[in-house]
Amino acid sequence: MNKSNRFLLIKAWGSGFWSDMEHVAGQLLIAELTDRIPVVYWGADSLYASEDPLVKDAFTMYFLPVSNYSVDHLVNENYTYYPTRWNGGNLRLPGTKDLADLEDAAIANVFSRSENVVVSNVHIYVNYLTKWIKKGHPAYGLGVNDIYSYLYRKYFKLQPYLSGEIEDFYLKNMKNKHPVIGAHIRGSDKIIECSQLDDLNNLYPQIINNYLKNNPTASIFLLTDCESILSRYKGLYGNKLIYTECMRTSDDNIPVHSGLPHYNKRKKGIDIIKDTYLALECDQFIGNSYSNVSLAVFRLKAWLEGTITLF
Image (cartoon, rainbow, N blue to C red; front, side):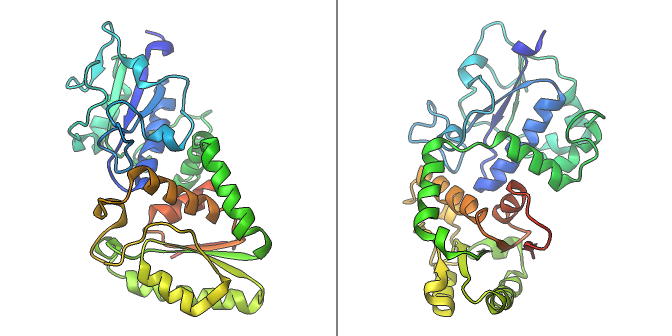
């Protein structure tokens, strides 16, 4: 078997957008380390699925393909598949997540598979994989966040229409308002994961106010999933505040990414991406290290020392 018929199919993890992207990044590293061709297919198991998830991949609605192959190339009567529940007829369908794949022995097993197509829909963090990175690989010797940065910047290339929308917003709303401090402030269901969320969120105004004291003409770009947070910051900063017109929740018990069934899935992904990439245009950034959106902002740009803070 040669590399041209060795594939890793990366299916959706089924969580928040940048959590799923972190999952994709970990699998891309596995593809590099096992000399497999990566193929991403986000189907009906994605929170950001296309209008026809059994036919149209959602990942490539937002990003360019990570290789020259699609899921169609993986359907071959002569191919073998792992895990054995997968076959050429069900690759587009949602499937049970084998959480045992998070164990060291199971990960090692993936590295030794001989099947043509290995399928993964389980989020494996990069820190589980560092022991398999050999000298000579670009990620060898790097810290976990630096490995993610290497993978994000290498593989995550926006579709041109989306780059265009982001640039258009920047030119109309941000370009002439520098310096800009970006602030990603989570609300809604994040309190379940982060019990001290309110305490963390109360730290933002002091840092923003200090920034404005040193930069009186500065603006604030706010990323938030919560209407009450947006309303509060409008009251605090008035016309200094910049924000996109995306869907936000008015109920802290309802998560935006899974609790608003009327929120178009494709639009939901676009909104998250636009906020994330617009944050990269900021001169300073503060965020929440418990949030994958803030982590994505950190990983996608080579921030100068002292210009980014994650609580």
